[in-house]
Length: 142
Image (cartoon, rainbow, N blue to C red):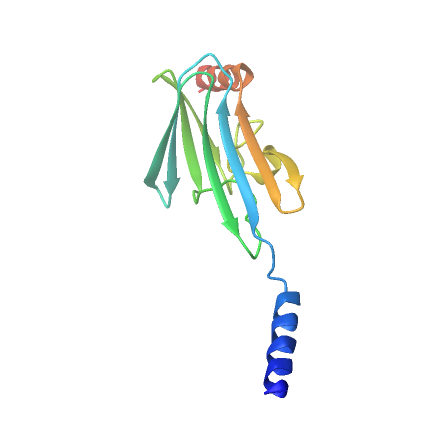
């Protein structure tokens, strides 16, 4: 009986020492700081996959948690997207092609990164009036 209690105690002590890997959390925020309504249509293999509406001074947040880590932005699968301002001015962002935009929502390097804790990461893409002006300029140069 004493042996059983000692074995049970040893197993209990050892099992309490085993730590599970931490959960990693990624917050991905797409924010509209421009003075224009934004609609984003996401495309994969020339098919529309999703649409995001961003009213003025609003944002869309995606959150992912995983023990193995989190992916870099963007938080969706797309090879191109079309950003439409005020239902009229459009600009296209590509993942794999040369493009006429200074920043692309599809490129991780264009997102602002912040590590809040060792396991919590925040990525932010902010649309500004400069992005709208770039869309206007590209529209006029077509």
